[in-house]
Image (cartoon, rainbow, N blue to C red):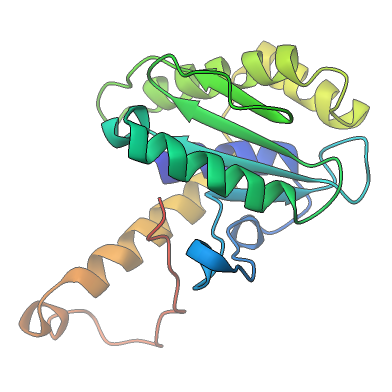
Length: 198
């Protein structure tokens, strides 16, 4: 599995009525984020505060545990939280992290194994369980109920799975050499997508 698959499934649970691709967006930034502020997942409407954003970051690379990475993560937290009052940042990692301040929830998950749906389901369940615990008083009641129902069913969302597969396929096509790309089946141009931050 990939972090894109995890984010797509989580986004579909938090905002099932929105197109999954709308949850992967960038925001104007300044300073060290002058080229744009790109959370791994951005949702509005998942929290009780109607204007608040719930931003999710995946910190799987070991650099996030080092001083420079931690400093950058904290700066990004502050920038994201400044976008709207009462917003929250959820940071998913595979290791223990120091407390990152107000309105930031650190979620620790096991390393996933292989490409199976079982691995994705297990990791998604770990994330949701900790979000339900850490954000219980912040989540919109309807969202909290939906997350609880998912924990009981453990079913993956087909549209999120299709989105992640298409996005990964697009990225791989763009990464090919011109010779390889010329071998692709003719058809309408694919929409430009960028998931470089994942």
